[in-house]
Each structure stands twice: as structure tokens, then as C-alpha cells.
Image 1: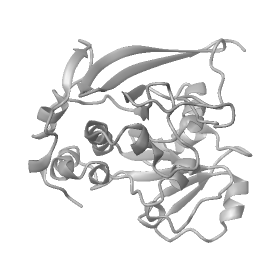
Image 2: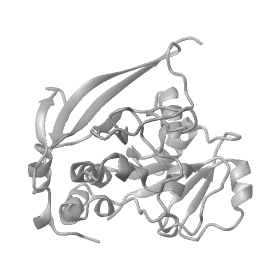
Image 3: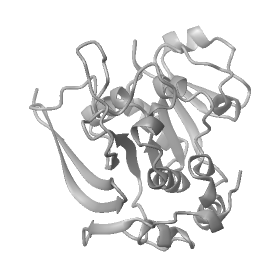
Amino acid sequence: MTGSDASGLAEPLQVLYEADNVTNGMLPEPLPSWYGGSLRFPTPRLVANFVSSLDGVVALPGLTQSNKLISAGNEADRFVMGLLRAFADVVLIGSGTLRGSPTTVWTAPHAYPPGGQAFGKLRQRQGQPAAPELAIMTGSGAIDVHHPGIQAGSVVLTTRQGASALGDRLPASCDLVVLPGTAQVDPTAAVNALTARGHQLILSEAGPTVFGALLDAGLVDELFYTLSPRLAGRSPRSLRPGLVEGAELLPAVRCDSRLASVRRHRDHLLLRYILDAETEAR
């Protein structure tokens, strides 16, 4: 899927704020016109990407591809997702994200088809292969080995228990990496394994539980956060997660952030934060 750059964003992102120290670099046209400027990342880097409802819900359990419902199908959110994938060496997800996206392949054109040609030029310019590698964290090994993302080739980061559960069911296109951990994969070991594979820019599209584990370990450098004007609502029984789940950061982990940019597309705000986590004595 390459897409056609001629039918891109009808309304480019409007830049409301950009910090002076944000690292910028040249992008192939029409990407800078759509994004409202340029973009580049120092490496090594772990960047996370989320979309959230106005009341802080990031997923609707039980619904596939609930992020599209939360984002109200906003094309700018999809474009930024594609742009980040175009930069990434590897896209990191958890088993919950894999399960909730049964038809997804984690490539830039899949997120935003109109940018396919320009995304390809960007990856060529950076000396990268056509698509980032897909990495899946699963402690249990309970994943659908027939998922198109796995069939296309991926690296599965799991535990001994997960490897035992998977057995020999993974296709030959996949690599299995066994890491420390019992019920869950150790996030530091997972990131180190990806770095050892030569990946300098890791894009996390994992859900809030994996994101919480990455934050707790001080591994996240940046957060791209789309704030949708849509309200999701909660009830005591809905279990609708917020941005960070499964980790209590304060007071032991001081994870502060600096606002790097604010962009607007209609009623959506697209925010970029630089994170600075400091772990105190527990």
C-alpha cells in the first residue's frame, strides 16, 4: 500500500506552540506542509503515541480498534501516527493491542495511506527498510499467531512461560526472544533486546499497562498525545483505562514532562511532551 500524496490533509496542522529547543530536520514534501513544520529525533529514543478522549479514556475494552472511535476518526491523528511510524526502527506493542487490532499491520501507510509515497521517501532518506519491525511483548504467550502483523514478520518478546505456551506455533518470519520476568516481560530487558537488534528509535503503540511499566522503569523519552474533543464516560464497572495503568508513579517516581509543541486540527489538539523520569529511593 503506497497511497497518493495528492489527497492528503485538506487542513494542515496549525502550529500553536513549538519550543525553541525542539529538534527539527528536513522532511520530504508534502509532509512539512501537512505537519506545519519539520520533525526529527535524537537517538537512541523511545517515543510513545496515544489518543485520548477529553475525559482521559484511551481504550474501550471489548471493542476492536477503539482508538478510532475515541479519536472520532480524525485524519490528523492518523497522519501523525503514520509520520511517527515512518521514523521508527521498530513499533512496540503489547498482546492487548494486538488482540484489539485484528486487521492492523503497523506500517506508516496503513495508518495514513495518502502519505505512503512521502513516508517511503523519508525512510529511504534515513537508510531504513520499507517498514519498521513489529515487536510484541507478551508474558503469557497468549497471542494469535495467525494475526497479519505476526505473519508479516515480527519479534516476540516473552518469558519462559510464554515461550512454553507458544511452542513452535510462530511462523518462520518471526523471532522469539525469551527475557526475564514471570507473569510480565521485564520492560528494561525488552528495550535492551530491541536496542541489541540495532533499533535506535522505538515507537511504543502499546496500551496503558505496558506504557505504565515503561514509565516506571524510566524508559520513555517522548509522548505524542492527541486530545480528542469526544467524551467517553466511565462507570464503576466499565474498567475504561486512562493513560497510565498498572503503575503508581508518585511519590516514588517523579515523571515530569516539558511541553515541546502544540498543534491543532479542527477541534483536536496534538501535543508533544519531552519526559524526564527520576526515581527516588522507595
